[in-house]
Every structure is written in structure tokens, then in C-alpha cells.
Length: 297
Length: 325
Image (cartoon, rainbow over all chains, first blue to last red; front, side, top):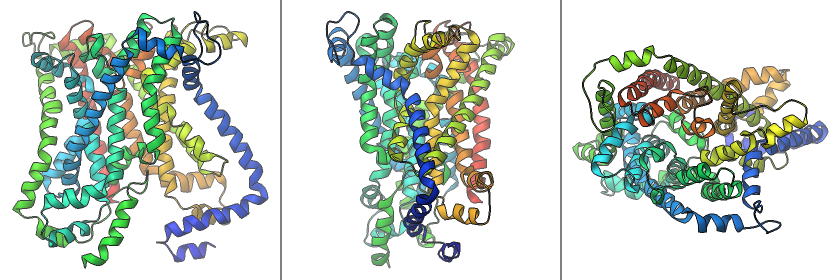
């Protein structure tokens, strides 16, 4: 069996198909019992791990202590929308996050292309610089930026927040894009160059056009960073109507920390978009993409 | 030449970045040809493509870092720069017990965060690699702690453990184990924060390791077991070396994530009780925005920064070296 394997070292995918079939035959003898034990083990582990998330969802849809409703209810959700600025917070979060995603990709894609194709000293120096900046604590730059933005009227302002988010996503986003571009063969571009295309032309028409998965992974990364951020928001946002959802959830929690139904309803609103993105774009959700982009380069 | 290579190249490109597929860095064919194209026009294009990124880097990272250097050497506040005090802020910070206590907690938090989440992630990745009914579903569900915002999960954890009447303390009481005050007792609070961190981070590790394992051919194990290798030998001689590279990278990244982590700690305990869970970031945040002592606060951040720069440059070199091998 293994002799066949060694005879075709390049045929990885083909063997991948043949592998499970072989496994099945082995499994039918003794593997079935082990399989069910592992199923039960993973079922229990998953259930325990997901307790905090299940608790959130259950409490959000269970009638609160002062409610007359029974069974599952949307009362808590409609309550937070009518009694708090939840709708505004949601809108603020969506605007900031979408702007961050678009600008991040727009900045990171061209830079990533240069990192992928350029081989000069300056380019590799820039690559190292990005890596170093990426590892710096946000808190260091937050204080000087706060003073700068205060002078420019960008404190308590969604645009100011977006600028910082783009700044913090751009390092890793550039690396992710560069790693993806590395997988696009240069021969494609050469063909277009022969047809008289410029470097910029081949970047937009050939490379970008074939990079949707890479762009999506990068976009998801930027989305999660902007959507989940708390540290930048707590420093830069002051007024209730400018709050993003993390600030909204926190301020509501601090003021009404016995109103768990309300808190959890807000929490569900906040976790819904990332979960939806994750559920639909699961394929591109390469958490490993960050690491993979580091590994590849 | 190009007409024949293009379609297969496209197919390769479309396959794209399968999560965890072997990373890029494949040697580019046609290297010679490309070099000849690197004309003045190309470098001009590269310059314009890189410009937005450079501007942002200078504005969001470079300038603040420079300013932070100024603030760390002045006794100012958020409004005024204040007088130049040299390294007084650093001396003050390094002499304060609060700094060393926070440094100690940060170290412990990072070690537990990195290796705890790695161990859990590795275990689950190995378990999920075997044939399990609905294995794919579990894999997706187990990523949720990483996907759900910290603000949300910390709220849920608060509901579970914060007061003596919360679910988990009640459970302990009913089991006759007393009523542990998970967030009020200093040691327990520190432990809870670290468990929370592991809970948040293990999916990241699981994904990194699963990705590395996915590129390993099953037949390697079949061959090994035919040669009489035990389970442990297979694990230590085959699995660990094969995932060594991504393990290494995931440790580096998780170290950075842990040292820089703010919300996981701040939202669960606020740094308390009695500063038992105050990490360096939390300390820096409080010093600047609650005590309004910009100089010392930035000095703390600066000390962290310098440590991380040294660590990350060294590690970057190491990654580059290992990717050449």
C-alpha cells in the first residue's frame, strides 16, 4: 500500500480521495465503536463550551421578570429598541465596520501586490515594518492619537474611529493579501504584459479579478476587528448617540445590570452579524489566514 | 507559451487560499522574465500602489509612536505636553510595585493563554481529524467562542459567575462545594480571567492546527502503524513535527494577542479585585484615562512596546529562517 504512495509523491489530492475509502474498510471492523465514543465526547465538549452562548440566546428570548408573556418572546428585543438607542448603535457599528472593510481592502490590496511581486530591499524592509507595527499594543498609539484627533475634532466621531480601525487592520490585511497574491502565478500577468498591459493594468485586470477568496478573507478579518473593538471605542467615543454597539451594550449593562433580558437582547443583536458572516462565508473565514499569511512569507 | 499555461494557472488561482492550504511562497516560474520587466515604470507603479499604505502607517502608527516617545519623557496630561522630565517617568514606573504586579500577571496570563489554548485546540483538532458523525458541524460550532464579540461573551460569563447566586456558584453550592466568589476572590478572579481567555482563544489554535493537519496525508499514519509505531510514537514523531511550524507561528501570534489584550480582562473584572487581574495594558489605560497621568501611562505602554518590538523582530527572523528551510 505504502509503496504505491511513495511512487506518486505529487498526487496528493488523488490520494486524499482514495484515503477515506480505504479508511472505511478498516473502520467497519473495530472503528465503529470508537467512532461513537468520540462522537459522544465531542458532543459533551461542544455543549459545555457553548453554554455561555446558549445562555445569552435563551435569556434574550425568555420573558423578563416583569413580563406577562409566556414561552419564547421577542418582547426583550423590541424593548431594547424602543427604550435604548440600540437602533442608532447598530447603525453606527454598521457604518464604521463597512467603511473599515472597504477602505482596508482598498489600501491593503495594492500594498499587498507590491509586497508579493516586489523583491527590492525597500519592499522587504516595509514588510518587516508592518510585522513590527502589527505587534505593538494599540494603547501606545491611542493616547497620542487621542490628542491629535481632539485637535482635529475627530474625537467622538465615527470617521475618527474608522481611521484608527483601518490603521489597525492594514498591517495584517496587507500580509493576507500579499500571501494570496503569491498563489497567483506570474505567468498570467506576463501574458497580459505581452498583450501590452501595464503593471497596474495587470494588477487590476488579472490579479484582482482572480483574488475574490483572498479579498473576502481579508474583508472578514477587517469586519471582525472593527465590529468587536472595545478599547478604541471606549477611548474615543463620548456621547450616547455616537456609541457603537460594544459601547452601547456595555453602557446599558453598567446602568441596568439586573435587567438581564435587556442586556442579553442587546448582546444577541451584537453577535448576530458576525455569526451570519461566519455562517455564510465560513469557507473564507480563515482565522488561520493570518497565520497562514505569516507562514507563507 | 502563455496560452497554454494560462488556463491551468487560472484553475490554480481559483482554488485559492483554502483555509490552511499550504501557504503561498511557491517559487514563481518565469522569474527571469519578470526581472526584465522591472523597469522604471514598474517601480513607479509600485510606488503609487504602496503610497496609501505608507501614509496610513505613518499617520496611525509612525506619528503616534513618535509622539508617545515625547509624552513618555514629559510630565504632561491629555491637554498639555508639560515639562521635559527625561527618564523620570520610566524610573517612576519601574520603581512602582503596581507595575511589577501587573507585569507578573501579564506574564502568567500570557503563558496560560498561549499554552492553555494551544493544548485545548490541539486536543480538539486531533479529535476532529478522526472520523466522527457530524464532525464538520462540531468544527463550525466550536469556532463560535472566537467569532462572538468579547463584549457579548464577557456579559454571558458575568451572568454565569459574577454573583453568589449566579448559575455556576449555585451549582457548586448545590454540590456541597461551598460558594466560590469567582470574580471577588483575587486568586479565583485571576483564574477565571485566564479560563475565559482560553475559552476565547482555543478555536484560533484549533483552526491553525487543523489547517496544518489537513495537509498531512493519512497514508503516512497507515504506513507508520504498519511499521509498528504506537499511538504515542505517531503523535510525537509524526504529528508534532508536521504541525511544528504552524504551532510556532500560532504561539507567536497568541503571545502578541495576550500581551495586548484589553477587553477580555477589563470587561470581566475591570482589573480587580484589588488589582489582582490588572495587566499592563489595563494599568496603562487606567493611568492615562482615570488618573490622567499621561507620562507614566505612556511610559508603561512604551516599555511593553519595546519588549514586543524586540520579541517580534527576533521572531520574524526566526519565521523567515524556518520558511527557507
